[in-house]
Image (cartoon, rainbow, N blue to C red; front, side, top):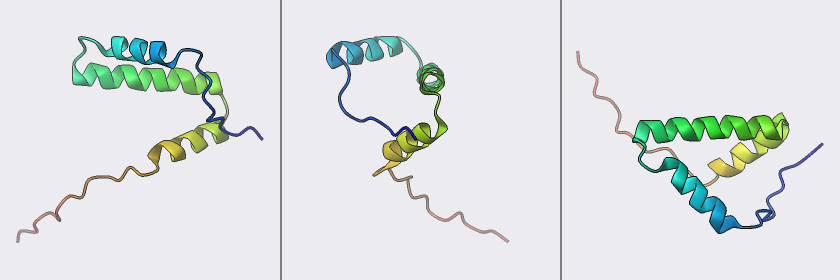
Length: 76
């Protein structure tokens, strides 16, 4: 079963980062989120292995916690 390869594999990571930033230039927050979602789905399709994708999602989520919202007031 394939596993997620987290070794650095980009020949020019700085150029990739610059292209990623350029992709978002002049976009609204909503459009930027849409472009991110489309990119994620395209890359997920390229990877094509659900187990590897789940492993990547779990790794990406590590250390990220949702904000704590105060309990909603109950009115009667």
